[in-house]
Picture (cartoon, rainbow, N blue to C red):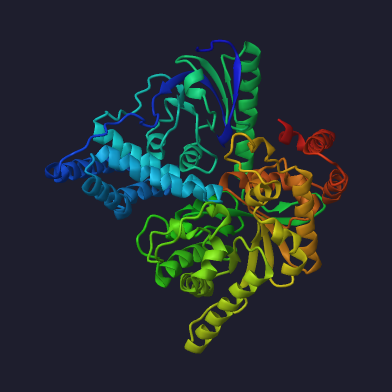
Length: 589
């Protein structure tokens, strides 16, 4: 039954800003009903031809959306996201899979496409890295578009007359790119996460967005008055006059703050007591470098390299690695670039690795550094590319998912052999290149004192560290409430990692989701975190928070909360502390 009274939906803040307007419901639900038809061998070629035509139609539609995005100067860099979708439409692994299913099983193209998409989704569902796992959404967007063209459903653009807030089950990056700022105030979706490509485009277009609302498209009626708060991730349906007045004031304050932060983005982040803290950016595609730097990043703290491996039949060559890394290192220089080695499992690589056995729990199986050590040629190829790129600017290497000393020693041994070979052949590279590890599993955290003696830096990956420490799956609706960065065990682990690192004179960066939330900035600084690396849009906010902080006060806060027994107790304590410091008031808004 539809609700018409005031109610509040809680989701994930995907693009900051506040919008107040009327809801327009757009049906973009996944196609669940599609024809399942057995065909004769004589109809196979006709069916494949029909599939090819659907791909061509999809290509033209996404190309149109890409051109529109490119015409928008502020976001033309993100046209690459749609370029990726165009590449997916030419990806032989998807096309061949569908064609084989049609030929072998004698089924129609819709049925074959659905099976192929389900295989991809299952393959990615168990991957440990939230960011990489979320990339499956892009494959689904592309697949759904092909499906709509296959079944002949018309794909309409959005012809909005009045300024509206779009409410939908989901929106693809192409849909989002076609939104006109003249008519769209914001959007709310049932699914999605803050690092999705849809969220990135929404942020670039400066359209407030809240995603992951679960039931927005079914609990909101067309024409309902909405307050959409893309800062806290809240949508208020049919708000009171007082709520509207309050949020109108908040919207003005937010715009003033954003303008101020934009002007100060490139200024250093120096605490009240004079300590300079570096804030760097996380990067997936090299085309995002300009956006990250424009938001004030002082380097790249996490350059994900998985894009080189996904959706391709052949493992990337050393030259491909080299060119991809060199382009970023040169652009970011003189700031540093930290390149993380492969963080996928073998089942995600459509490569000549051979038949990898299907694992029951790939997130804890053969992935990241474990896969690289099992397949040393794969690892060496990437390391060679990184070493060659290091000759063109300040570069560091970071190994993911290190769980013990043996793994680290084997990885370092392979690296040293390549260096030796390069010296012998006269191939230039940075002899002083820093090597670090991501500390993201409890075993690495517990032996941080030993690992700190072996590397140049730590980077704490909080997303996995929290999940593995508390033994919960964030994607599991029954236990995801337990995911809490303020859990005493998590805070004690972080403090121990930092103390061990500093005892050996190495730096500690944080590159997980926790690093981009200003509510945690005072705590992390109080623990001694040296660097933050986060998404582009959080950088200026984190820098501004650092400028308001006195490290002595932060250390005192941390000393107190480390004695506490529950996350609830810790949260109540820090909120009271933040209230006492007027400069922290923006955290609590």
